[in-house]
Length: 185
Image (cartoon, rainbow, N blue to C red; front, side, top):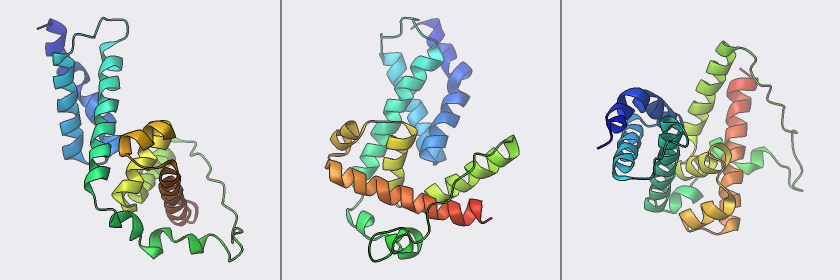
């Protein structure tokens, strides 16, 4: 075993945990993802030192997170997608009968200082927690991890139309929650 492997957890474990926790929003899943990453790194012979160990480990972790999210989506009943709480993500709240905006989307200003950024991220995390798990997962895959739709569809075994509908519902749910909790607050 390479001596670098023994130091990877000490040198990069906290960073990898925070990275996973920010994306999975569950401490136990984040720990599992980091453990799986370390096991994969130990078993792999592909680290050649072309990049930093942290970059390489983060790449492995990204794949482990996507695998975890894919597994969660496949294991949850389809009814979770359909049974959206109307108070959280109803499209009737955004559009009139002709399909036009009732109120045009407000501009979300980017917080300028660290305290505002921390508050915004806290509110965003709370809004993500209110989404059904499948919608939160596809939002994370597409808009945070920047996974292409074609790859999302393959990984989740869904159609492109279904992916776009799920992503749209996630974005509208987040929009509504942020307008209530960030803009109005």
